Structures are given as C-alpha cells and as structure tokens.
Image 1 (tube, rainbow, N blue to C red):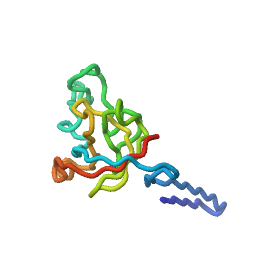
Image 2: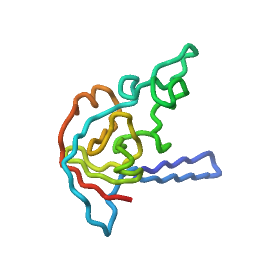
Image 3: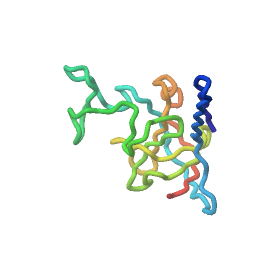
Image 4: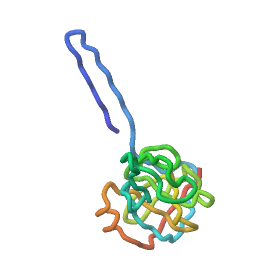
Amino acid sequence: MHRIMIRIGFVGLLIVAAGCTSIRRPSGSAPVERRMLVTGYCPCQDCCSWHRNWLLRPVYDSGPLKGKRKDIGVTASGTKARHGTIAADTRRYPFGTVMWIEGYGMGRVEDQGGAIKGDHIDLFFKSHADAQEWGKRTRRVKIWYP
C-alpha cells in the first residue's frame, strides 16, 4: 500500500491518499492451471506498433486504428500499463482475469495485442531491455476468471 501525506502551513491541512497497487488472487474460487507461451512487451514503438506522424504525435502503425492517435502506456481497457499488466486474447481471457505466472508473479488482463492469440500472454515491462531479457518462455500459469 502506498501512502502520500502532505502538510501545508500552520493550518495543518493534511491530505492522505492511499492506494493499493498489488494484485491479489480472488478468494473463493479455484484457479485453472495451464502451460502457456509467455512473452514480454514495453510501451516502445517496436513492441506496440506505433510511430510519430509529421506533427510528432504518436499514431498507430497498422490495423483498424492505423494513423489514429495512440496514447502511449495506456492499455486497451483504458488503464495505465504497469508491472502486472497482461495482454491476452480477450475472447479467451477477458479483461479483469487474474493470473499468476511462474517466474513473474501476479497480473491482470488489461490489454490485448494483434499477435496475442489463444494460450499466449504478453507481460508488461517498463523497458525494452527488460522485455527482451524475459524473451519467449513457456510457463505454468494459474488463472482466475472474473
């Protein structure tokens, strides 16, 4: 849990903001266990298929949104990508599906990708080097559907 405290002047204005960024497994349901292809991605142009247009704005490279503005670091579900963000085939694993990935930890499906089909998931990393270091692995995955 992260806490932010701000105290201003003699009045003693105190603002406390608390938020929990950890992903927890749902209680009360047994997970489904599978072996899956697990790859890594980051918000870079190579991983997320975007480029800058002549106005230097990021836009999609291909697909139905080709040429449309791209919000870098924002997932298909509208959340900010961070450690624990998973891209999956949402026909099989809908947004909100919680997963535990061997060697990575807990994550939640919040994104999707054109090359992500079936039992293949993509894990978010902050840097391209970290995503490349993860590479392409087959891992044991526990799945809790929403």
